[in-house]
Image: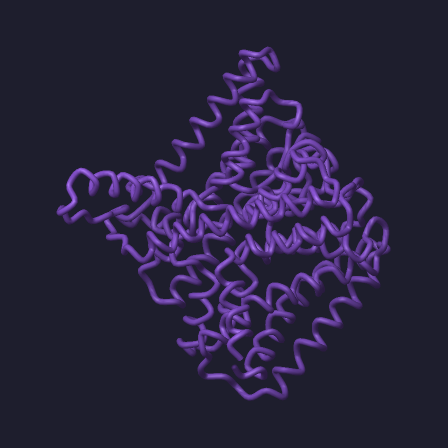
Length: 479
């Protein structure tokens, strides 16, 4: 592996971060805030460290798969470290561990926070916090791919690492075309939601920050009470619609917007995803009403928002779900594990994998009845290779292993079982809120420092979908 090649791409990643840091710095200067110097210093650090590799390392025309793995894994880790600089310099609640946790949570679009008073942050820092979501949502590496010269091999290698195989099932275009589709849909959704939230009565700054968080399915709000602060049905409906859209495969959204035959309305996976979300909303609403928690209208309103928020890994809140009945909590835990579609900004197992495993199980049951039959598994007209079936099964097993290990480590640190269990699932799935002490109206501030570090690693594993990290570690062992 050529170290200089990896360093060159890491430099480009730092420069992308520097661009958003500079915007946050300008906001801070305009409002004459205390975050001006921390943001300026962080911008300069990223610019200096990012520009030197571009000057001294020759242009790269080809990279190996191992180099691609290293760029993605180290790039994400380095980005999270760079992103914590403004927090540390500003101070407040940001200790070293807290700053790292908040940065990782932002970039991985988890949305878990250590802050007890979000509104104490100056707007420049709030914008940077929201920007980490927006950069992480589409993927910091995807931004780099968009600005790379038209050298097909490096772009293809990096995309194959950054976007999982199951997410590529609906991408039947060239790498450049795929990236253009992703960026186009991402920008269009962000602009549309910002405009609609502003028209619904939310301030422009808050509209931008909440749009960044929604489209990235992140969940960082500018308010301590999250979306509950606004107490607006119109705002909640807008956010629910865009959360559900952001949980869909962006390739399908593109073909739907452009009137192509292969679209959301013809995709069994997409329709099943929306159907499962609707069933979850109705079950929770019925449970809340039946047990006297809310009136019928309020039960439906609350259930609709919270199920969509958890099921798309966004993590916004309009109510403290920790106080809900056990049945509703179990429904939310299921959606925390399953989450939304592959090819979206959502985390978790992904609905596509669950859908694939259900159909794979049906296939195996049919083979038990007819051992000599030739059974082909098709999803949305595409033949699914058996290697993808095996890969999906292994991924699910690894996913369970990681959150069980994380739960054990947290309980070892004297964290209660429900808090440890729900925090581990929420961080691995990049969902955000858990239950008990880390509920939708709570935060992660009371967890021990070692626990926050463990969950930071878990968030990165969830965002990189485990296999990339394992591949990177095996590459290091092989050197």
